[in-house]
Structures are given as C-alpha cells and as structure tokens.
Amino acid sequence: MKAWSGLILSAVLAATSASAQTPPPPGSAEALPNMAARLRDRALSGSGAYDILESLTTEVGPRVAGTPAYGRAKDWAIAKMTALGFKNVHAEPFAMPVAWTQGVETAEVTAPFPQPMVITGLGRSVATPPEGIEAEVVLFPTMEALQAAPPDSLKGKIAVLTEKMGGVESATGYGAANRWRRRGPVEAGKKGAAGFLIRSLATNDNRAPHSGALNYDDDAPKIPSAALSGADADQLERMAKRGKPIRVHFTLRPTLTPNATTWNVVGEIPGASSPDEVVLVSGHLDSWGLGTGAIDDGAGVAITLAAAHLAGERHPRRTIRMVMWGAEELDYAGDAYAKTHAGDLSKIVVAGESDNGAQHNVAFGMPAGAADLPAVKTLADVLAPLSVKFNADPVRAGGDDVGKLAPLGVPQLSLRQENSHYFDIHHSAEDTLDKVDPVEMDKAAAAWAATIYVIAESGVDFRKAAPPPAKK
Image (tube, rainbow, N blue to C red; front, side, top):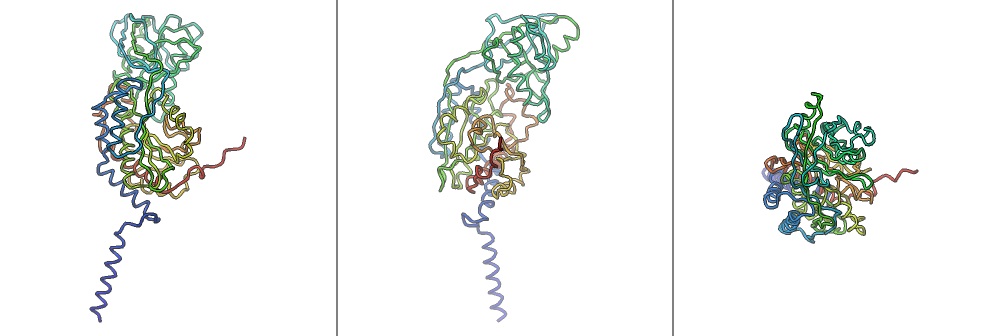
C-alpha cells in the first residue's frame, strides 16, 4: 500500500510540475505578461535592430528629404519591410514646399586675426551670393539680447548668437535652444542683418557643427544662416574681448528645390482578430546630409521595425503598423500623414515614435487616464527588469511626427531613452554607425517589442480611459 501511495504522489507532483511549466492558453489572465516577458527576453538575445541600422547607413547613407538619396531610402524601406513579412507595404508621396540640401559652406575671420572657421547651413537657409558675404559681426550672448537690439541696429552686419545650449534637463536644453535656431534668423533679419550665425546646438564643443531647421517669416527678410562650431564661437568671444572690430566672410550655396516629393513608408502586420484596430509605431527615415543619420534617426527606424517584427510573430489581436516618416527634419511628414489618413485616424489605438538615439530606454508614458489600466500595470511589470519606469505624466506628443496626430484625437505613447550624449553628435558629421552599441539597441528593441505586444493583444482602449475635456 505504501508503494502505491508513493507512486500516486509522484504522479501528482509530476503533473503539477508539468502544469507549472506549460505556457498558459491564449486569452488567459496569465498569457499576456508571460508572452510579453518572453518577447522581451527574445529581443535581448538579439533583436536584429543593429543589422537593420547597419544596412540602412551602409547601403543608403544620409537621406535628406526630397532628394534622390531619400528616394533610395524609400526603396530600401519597402524592400526591408517586405523581406520581414510585413503586408500592405507602400510609399505615400507628398509634396514639400521646398527640399534643401547642403552645398559649399565656408567661413573665415578676415580681421583682425585672420583664420578659418567651420560652419554648416541651417535647413531652409537661402544662399549667399556666389562670392559670399563679408561684414562686421555683432555678438549676442543670449537670444533675449538679440531680440532687444534696436531696429536697424544690425544693418549690413552679421549677427552671431553665442549662447550655449544646456544639458538635456536644463532650462536652456534643446527645447529652448531649438527655438533660438528656428527664430534667430528672423530676429536678425528684422534688425537689418545681412547674415546670421548661431553657436551649434550641441552638448560638446568640438568642431563638427550641427545643422537643423530654421523657420523664416513671410514678412521678414530671409538672410543666409548657418551653425558655427562651438570651438569657433568661443574663439570669436575671445577675439571680441580684445576690443577690435571683427570681420567675417562666409559662403553658403545650398540647393533649394521647390515642390519636391518625398514619401512616408508604411507596412503592417495584420491583427489576428481585430485588424481594424491599429497600434502605430514609427521612426523618421530622413536625415541631414552631414553624417549617415545613424542615431537620428536610423536607430529609431531600426528599433521600432525590429520590435514590430518580433511582436508581430506572436500574432496579436490588433494590427501593428510601422511608419517611416519622410520629412521629420523639415516638419512636413506628420501633417502629410494626417491629411492622407483623415478618414481612419479613429482606428489608431495609440501612436508612438522612436527619435532619441540608440541607447536603452529609461521610462515609458501613456495617454491621460491610463495609469490605472490593467494593461499598463502589466507593462510596468514586464519592463521593470529593463529598469524602464512608468512616468505617470500623460503623454501629449509621442514624437515630432505622431504629435501632429494628437490634436486629431490619436492617443500617444512615449518610450524615453537615455540620451545624455545624444546632442553631442545629432545633426552633425559625427552621426555615424560607429557611435552605436548593438547591445543597447537590443535593450531598446526589447522595451518597444513588449510595449507593442501588450497594447496590441490586451484590447486596452485609451480613448475611453481619457478624462473628459475640461469645461470652459
């Protein structure tokens, strides 16, 4: 009898052990976190994101919107998504008011201490005459000082804004400095300046200047404008302390192509049971022409593409839509997508964009009212081993491009990355593949893959979770 009892007990224990190791059936309460955790770990062991980025930066290189190089990037994107098994892969053309590419860019101090400087044009800048422009410079230590300059006080001169951009979290970080770059040429032009130079927006002071867009006003003079390397901005400030007038000569000969065509590139992994509900993830395919656009934003494209592919292999209920934006740097892609998809934006469950480098994620955020949703709590548990914490502040814009969809009612998500050195190289010739760590990319892809899967499989409705609009 004791022998039979022992055999029965052993059988029961064996059955219990086998049951504990068997994956829970789809649809069960345990299936979602377990599957998301497996997906996370699968990405950590090799997501394929780095290989995608290596392919893009090697086979295409820099990808300025509206140029033949971007046309090659569009073809690359279609081929890559098709090879990964995405469906409905297509390019959505749209017109840009102007495509802008760098040309000849030279600068030098001609007096009192002649020497070369390093500049790069700001996106949309008009050209100088072929011979360039030469004039006395007026240095401004802050944007406020430039704005306070008297009317016509800069007539025939070159305005130089030397204010240094602060760290990522500082009051003078990129959010503020981006406004200096975009508005500086307008302010200088209104004061009569013949040209504008701005200290490169960067968190280091090397001699690789960083480009970036400017925004002209229709009612203000459009003057040639460029970014000056941090080292050269410092040099001008030292010269100014000698008390002698400083003269600078610079030449910008960009190519401006009006009414150029570019493309958003789209592909999908259809949902298993709710294909009309869409989880939109994205990165921007265009870049500036200085480096190869590795961290800005080839990495974002590669991370979200790899993550969407891995999540799609688990056949979640909802459709996963990958969008590669065609003109983020010049601000046109999100609006173009919103116009093209005006009739089906209500089907987008949530939209997110990876555009903050190639490092691991540190936090995730969700739309208003989502903090207490079971799916969000599940995701917090799944991302905790990656040291990705939930930020309870509602996400208003999940990126420059998807943010254009927010006013139209599309819920936004954010996966913030470690970016303490991102602004050392973005928009510059230093933005190349050698700055990227494949392991870090796998960590980012793991966070995105788990996030995509949980939202696509859970059925969470962020629109219902959002609080009603405040009464006016």
